[in-house]
Image (cartoon, rainbow, N blue to C red; front, top):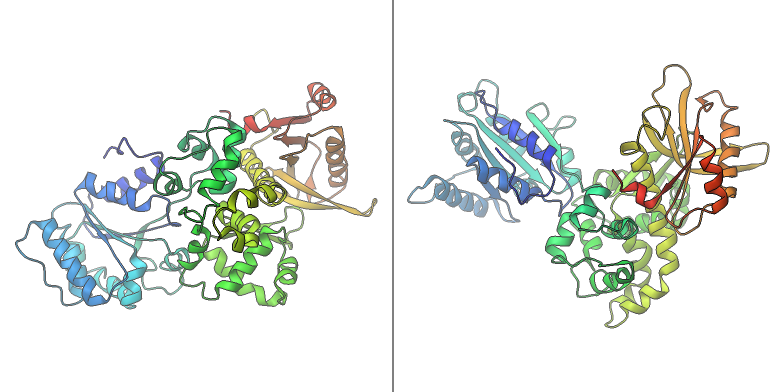
Length: 489
């Protein structure tokens, strides 16, 4: 099946789905598809069903009886029957879905599956029973049942531990957001600095451009501020409350105030548990559950310090949530009044640079080092890219390193390929390079990493001094990466 011409990217996902659906072997199979809302899951699966002549059913928040009645009506329409199929219960409904694949492989999609389980908690067990290994209805069917949902924590648990469907699925797919390069193409933004700024606010969620903003994008760097005002800070824009809705849509986030406070703490730069606990006025031991829930929901990402394995930091995984907590939430009462958006944006420029685009640029630099850096950048292929803190005992200080690139370990010492510093709004000069040299010197005295061949990589969106450029031109150990390089093939 050819991917629809109007579908942007998703080549890998389409290939996996068509391979799963097109398997001619007898025996019904199950796939689980999930990802945060607005990523195009429904668009993808609906296109799959249309291409393969499959059956697509979108669940809603409803009682079991109402859902079964609607499912029976849509089955009849799909099969060309004169009247609705009478479904007494989900046991019968699942067998009807299995019967759809009696003659050929056919995709059967149940979208928003968590809504069905909310009304019928036993549904995963009912599907497990219907898919019993030697059951005739399953062995004689080639239905490719695809269960889809946006409640990340719920969907992620469907196939884990003692869950009924554990071991039953032949496909588990997480539909991700578009990465920063794909997002720039999707938003049709050629200016790399503007692309990075836009991505720091709306990330790679396709629906924000197509469904929410109807194609409105910043036309230039000078239009970025007005675009933010009219599309994100305007109280009548659908993006205005979107960050709040992302939390409200997760069924496991019951104490909304606590989770918003945790996210605000992280957005304010408190990345360690101790800092988060201090910010929200709780004990460190109280954070285990809310942080785990936010991780499961795909809203927070945990990162280990490359140089100190016991030190874990947290960052917000969704740019719009970072923007909301850093810029919007502190000014919510003002933004909720007409005519205040432009003034709030003007007064929030420092917070935006320091808490939103600065850390986001560092993350883009790490992504570039991991996935896009050319072979000439490092002495070997990166195995892991992260960040870390290096203690400098001789000078009684510590150094934060924005980008740490390590290679595959062949012994007790990990090869350190590069250390880097990333600055969004600051011109990078010799002082930054000398700081990295000092960090490398300290690391060369350690026994857990081999920093003998580590290069110094300096990233900047504001440019480099002439003195640093002259140094880099004659020193193979120093690399200068501009924001345009992050987007250059």
